[in-house]
Amino acid sequence: MANLNSTEFFNKVYGCWVGKNIGGTLGTPFEGKTDILDIRDFHSPSGKPLANDDLDLQLVWLKALEEYGPNRISEKVLGEYWLDYIPAWWNEYGIGKSNMQAGLLPPVSGDYKNPWRDSNGAWIRSEIWASITPGDPEAAAEFAWYDACVDHGTGEGTYAEYFTSSIESAAYVISDREELLKIGLSYIPENCRVAQSVRVAMDAYKDGADWKTARQRVVEDAQDLGWFQAPANVAFFVIGWLYGEGDFKKSLLIAVNCGDDTDCTGATLGSILGILGGVDSIPGDWRQFIGDDIISVALNRASGSFPTSCRELTERVVRMAKITLAMKNSEITISGDETDLSSIKAQDLVATENYWEKMSTHDGSVFYDFVHTRAYVKYMTGAGIRQDGEAELKITLENKMPGQRHYSIRYILPDGLTLEEGPKSIVIQTDTRYTRRFGRFTVKLRANEYLAPQNRIIIEISSLDRPTDIILPILLLAE
Image (cartoon, rainbow, N blue to C red):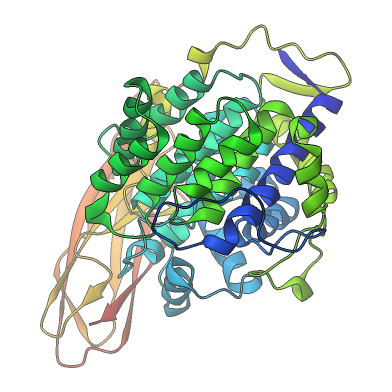
């Protein structure tokens, strides 16, 4: 077992949130400026941080963790918390919420008609997941999926949160920057645009180019994606980290001076450096400038008890980390004993085959768990349908119990839809070693002249000898 000393862990978590507040306050006045900047200090009144949605949303996730417990967190739970506690409606936030209010579940809520699915709203809120899973980047990335898919679906914005959450989790137990970047890259597809932009930044640094040249190479490589997108902005904070030479102020200033989503790049890098060095490594004058308060812009504080300071947030996150590590049977403990991380090597923290097998189910399908069976619904033609058009769904059933499973299938359709294709039964085998088996089938529906704005379908699947019926609610929106 590895151990994190309670006091040292508290200081790292506290450094995470103070660094987040500092970076967000430094960058907020310049958010959206696409030119290279020349910022050398804060441009806001001293004594208070500026409001930052990067922090606000994580307070809601903490509330969900405290009320549901880490083992019950899912994309559906976080989606409901979005609707109750987060009044913000801009960009992907608003699209995700609108899609959920229309009846679409995550991750479809993040994929459907969402031009912002590759943007920055998810990776900027990854610290909560890393801080409750220190030294377990695989668990952090799994939590990141539940979070990011609500408003980014299967887009680059989701990959970006896998990247940041895994780096931040690993940063609690190792400190080598190059190893941390390798770990982060191992948790995202090698050919995704986030990975591509990060590699452009890393290659420029290895080539001996200055940071402005590195930034320009990233801008040119990601130009086709447009403004305010995750790949380039993730690379901008990486540039700050690489060229900052371990200096907190220099690192954040370079990241912010790359421009674009400046509050996010500064805040995320501030968090990482705060985790690595603890709160005492953050320059005292910058800590004093922003104070310890948390100022909200995207949070309905009247609807619940949320932390109002970085110290209070740290206390509650540390409590949740101890609970999470225990519930997940982690090989890391947090105690009053001395920190001992000798059993942890960087190569132990890279993504495993098990991680990628698990992530393969995160293909845009809506997931349901019925104990004996898991069900996945994938909208092959999207969640919309046109009059006289056709919709195709792929249903995957995973038999989680030993023994053969015989399923009967019934379709309950509204007046505007007719069933073109779909089986009435399916059998899934399993062997004596309890190996899980999958059954898959396609459902095709056709719309007619009675198509309604919202078309709700129920696929009812019952299994012989099981009391729990599988009820799959499916929504198609008229286009």
